[in-house]
Image (cartoon, rainbow, N blue to C red; front, side):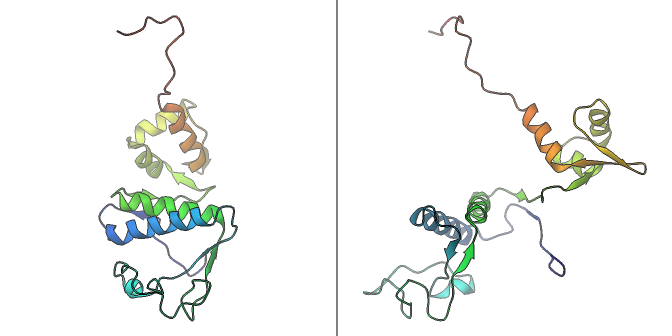
Length: 175
């Protein structure tokens, strides 16, 4: 996206959790009300939300949608159409931030430097290089520098997670 700079990580506490939690609930509710819709229409909210204020409770016979068109869209606004998968991703991001968790977005097919890959695994760079050279995950050399595909690193972390397996059939039962 030339000319557009997006911060690809969010640190906990840097965003208003109240507004984020409302946006997460609204997005999930909207997805539930429009099952199978693709693209998913997202509309604005009447009132002060555009100024970062929390939503107001519906009032009066119009349900708080004064100036709204019959379709529920505020007057003068068009729905933002999102592919369903993007709406689910947005909902997930909002829910994580609302719970106070930080997160990072890594585009697919991204190659990471050995330092960034080590940071993702929360290990030292020399330890990561040992893992790479032992064949734990594929990498490539660019000159004398190692590059690790983000997808390979994610697959490696998935393989390292202990699986919750049921106990063997002949295992003694706990009293």
